[in-house]
Image (cartoon, rainbow, N blue to C red; front, top):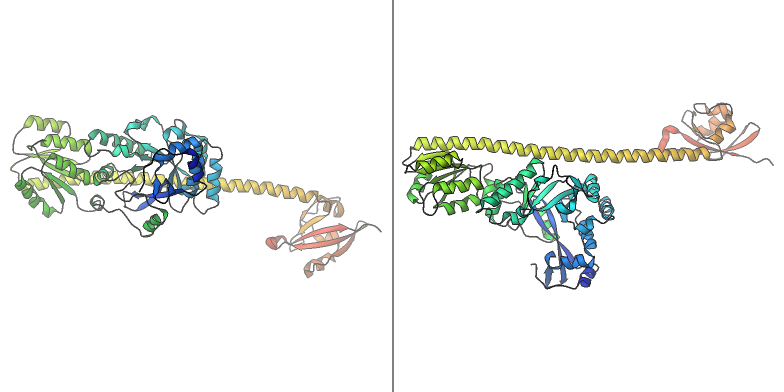
Length: 526
């Protein structure tokens, strides 16, 4: 458990890194579409003694003042390289360090981990040199394949819509955006704007601090991509996280299990006999039925469940049906809303219908067949809308996967181009070195055709023309052929142009098609 503490000595914090007192915890991140763990956020903790575990809020200010924050951050980033996605917060100070990029590249290069599995969480203010352009360090790491996440998006940060197309891979919604989200329509609207922003640009949207079923229900309704929070797991040490991943643990919830199951209908009425009658009527249709006795109870049920359709009584104590369904519209605009009343309060109900808060007005007593048909048709239309949204989300995911694949291919091609350029430069250097060697050097293929001859060889054995393509025997005599065929490594002497040369051979084993390397040594006159 994290333990609070008073202000601490900065020099003591700076030395803690050398003593190995800093620890990393891992909070799992879960995909909403499957419930499976997709990665984790790496969280820094400091254990100055066996009985104390400090969160960054306690010591981070001192860490920054001491100047050790860059070293601690650099250590955390290099420790966050693993064979599954791990995200780690990067301080503003480290982003400005010119050596940070090289450290990350070196750490990745020394491992077998793909760069895309490392995610750096940065603030919008620190990450963007100007709208739409990352600071140079992050831009270089992004091009290398590291994923960049903008951290702490929330209603207090203002609308992110000022950015044209953010050069990042995802956004993390701040825990403050989830506070009282089930009760406050304005919080739900702010969440909707942030998620919509991410959807517009194909970003991976992650909700942070999901601790209650109501918060989960909200982010599920808004179709976030992933979440982390105590509802699934608190931050754990590396051993516990590895065990969690190995065990294939997944998030189970009524909301998640209902994705491919029965449609969910919420019935709200202050009269128990009416709720009983509605349940008896609709249960044979295979719907998942939830009941609530009034508006506040209905909102609580709405927050914790993926509700497809709501049928609410109009006259209820404390909150009328129209008021309740107006709140439902603000919180869950995709949920179908119907009001049921034995009273003809036409003005309020007509206004609600005109404003879109109510899709259908049903009267008491109702006609069973008509009510069943009305509910079935509404859920059919809702299912079509859900499928359209699912396909759109799948298309966005496919687009992101394609972009990631293209980026990896581009990086591979760039690396191959660099290797080809380096190899070309190396080949040119080797050729130049061979040409400048003061002894005659030649290569012959298995048919004894000359495939390479340096300047000294041309001067010694063919001053009037080129040796390339010539048979070695035509230059050095027929006796050189049997020497080559024999495979013998003793020297062979030939007379040419009034001089005697001792020929030395080396078989080119890695390039068998090129045959043999021959070096000629001119004997000095006695």
